[in-house]
Image (cartoon, rainbow, N blue to C red; front, side, top):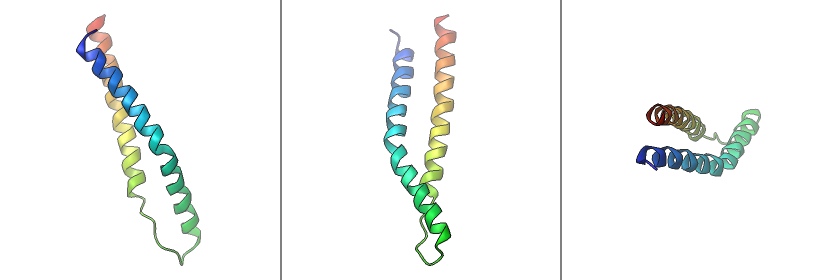
Length: 76
């Protein structure tokens, strides 16, 4: 197997593992933010980690698509 194929498969698999391992904590953060939105007296919870997680997932998806298309163009 060629190096490009290994990089593509590794990038996609590692990305899935990272995204799914962080998914539960991001769901808890969103729930906490929604609950704190109703309660004005409580502390503010930062939403920056959620925004960065969404941004990272989007970038990971775009790079994964590029690598898959690139792999098909190289091997066809």
